[in-house]
Length: 361
Ligand code: MG
Ligand code: ZN
Image 1 (cartoon, rainbow, N blue to C red):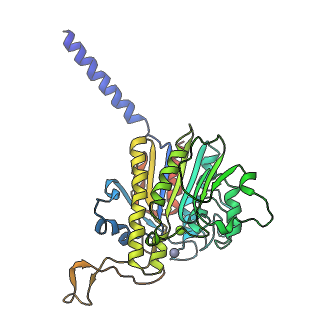
Image 2 (image 1 turned 135 degrees about the horizontal axis):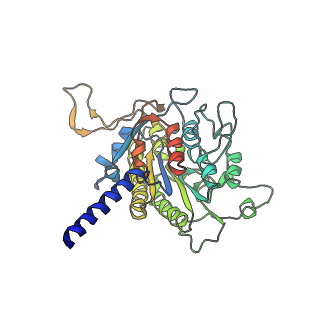
């Protein structure tokens, strides 16, 4: 009899739990990491599957989408309009940064989350003032205003940044804007931030403009900067949002240089691995991997000009152009809320999906 009662109780408890689970909404992410492979279309994305020994970390992601990238003015976007779309939810004209088609500043994810106790970080292999990272914090009518963008970064809510761009931060008036704004910047090397001071912001500016290409010895800068930023951002009791960009996949494609592209793509995959491993351990972090647009009309095609002359056993990377294309780009998601990132959607939807997850009604 006692056994029966115990069994009945057990069933009741189980079904009770099920009801609770059925009623409560999906767990919301505490932290958000967005990794952007600039210029990464599906062929670029496929590179680590053929040019790397290890199974790419991409295979671990179970929620996959495709993103439409056109800007407000052009079928084919560039990075500033794409970053503005993803980070403010607004389609705008090509080369606009954080402003709409009428050059009106639009609130970005960093601003919205910072006012809700989030720390924020940005890591890039270009200048930190380049279009993609700038789209995360700046409001300028043109991506070419690097000095103004640098000042936007100093005056922004960004708590951690890493990349190049020193030439845009040099102040001829002799003022130390970093010190005035409680930002500690390391200009020589990447290293873990030991004992961060409460409220202090940290930066690494390690090149005059863009960081070196992998082919010229950049080494493990991107995965390491990702790790150091995660270490810093997760070190307080606040939540965080981090954007990591593999900038030079795009530059390699513009240059139609396949060796450059392959090394940059494999490097980006390593940074994604760092973010993914962090999220697995953390359990409350949403990881989004996507791109702003495709560059180069890149293919992993066979060599030869017709089907009889082709060698299907050998991939011969080729480019159709030195410019961007309108191809849809892949998106991978992992963690709480990842299931909302499946299907085909506009780049602006990335912003709204994140906002809906972080601030559920
Ligand atoms: Mg970029
Ligand atoms: Zn480009």
